[in-house]
Each structure stands twice: as structure tokens, then as C-alpha cells.
Length: 254
Ligand code: BEZ
Image (cartoon, rainbow, N blue to C red; front, side, top):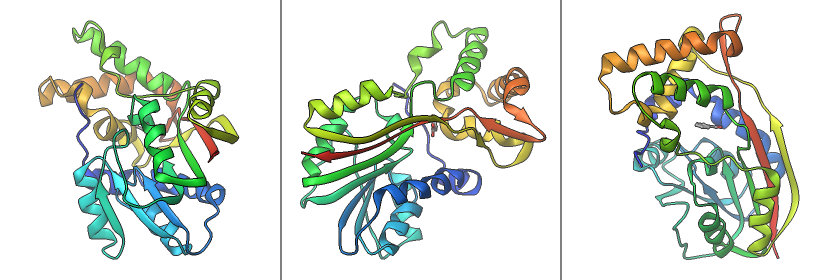
């Protein structure tokens, strides 16, 4: 599968909503001073820092080296490491694993949950939010339809995302010995930054791999066509609103 290209500058300049929305999840995490917390999929480290500010001893991991490089530059006093969410091992155990807007990038949830379980102390908690069933339906459908028109026979096969239902994800957690204390799926229409350029920025940031096989000129016209087709549903008063739907879970290692 083609990998997404992570442009940390575009991420920090135009996608700060990713960690701003994630701040709500920190309330569910409810850090106690001195706890050891692993931030899985920490990106450029903004929420890792909030967790540290709440008094935890925190470590941030992300599979994208560019993200970790930037996180270290942003917060040199914190610990960060490159690690793959579906295949990581840690040399100490954690009171909690926290993850915001990252797990929808990994299509092997069983492997991820296994790594999280192994990283937690007994009774440790897993607190996460990511894209749930139905997330970005309109964006993905439109992207695929434009790609079909460009001659890609089955663009959905290039889908790198995992958007489970509550039933599906809670079952996976229970199968690996977690008690699921809380699980919700909710629509969270998300205004994108930068006015008219919002959806184009989003595609460049998060869906660049779909377009990597075509020229820059074709990419620009594909984005224009996506904008044209999505405008009636996702554009209001000068702002693009992404059709996000989140799943939020709190589970305890039994
Ligand atoms: C999300 O946060 O839901 C998301 C971000 C990028 C691609 C797909 C989903």
C-alpha cells in the first residue's frame, strides 16, 4: 500500500484542530500526577505536552519519523520515539495508553490492541478517539468517484483507513482481555482552516497517497473537481466542514 506523506509544516499550520479537539479526550484520560502515560500516535507532540503539564511522566510515539523529529524540536524535554502502533514494545509498563486521531491509520487493530495491552500495567487504562464507522463518507466517496473518472479502476482498494463500529471495536478489546467502560460513536462535523483552501489542504495532508501516481497538474485539477462535487454538502459560508465521525473508548486491562 502507498504510504501517506507527512508534511509536518502543513500539519501544524493548517490542521491544529487535530490536537485542539483532542483536548476533550484529556478529560477522559484524567491524568493523576506521577502516572506513566504513553501517547500513541503523538504527531508533533502538542497533546503529549498537555499530558506532561498535567503531571504525568509521558512518552510519545509515532510511526512517522518526520512527526517525531518535529515533536522533539517542539518539546525537547519530553521523550519521543519512532514506533509502529501495530508492532511496538516498551521497556517499562504504563498506567495508561492515550491515543488521539491516530488509530484509524492502522488496519490491523488486533495487533495494535495486543501491543497496547502489553504496554499497560494490570488495571491500566486505554483511552482513545479516532475515526469511527461512517467517518469522512462524503469525502471518501467523492475522492473515489474522481479517481474512477481519472481511470483508476478500484480506488477504494487504496484506502489506508480503519473506521470501526462500536460493536466491532469493543469486541476486539474484549477478546484481548479489556473491560470496555465507555464507548460512543458520534458525528463531529469539523470546520477546516484556511477558508476556500480547506478541503484541498486536507487532501494534500491526509490523502496525498491517492494522488501520488499522477502529475502535479493532474493532482491540482483532481482537487478542483473534488471541491466542485463536495461543495453542495460540505461547504458553508466560506468554510469547509469535514464529515468526521468519531469513536471514543475507555477500556481497562482486566
Ligand atoms: C480523521 O481524523 O478522522 C481522519 C484524518 C485523516 C484521514 C482520515 C480520517
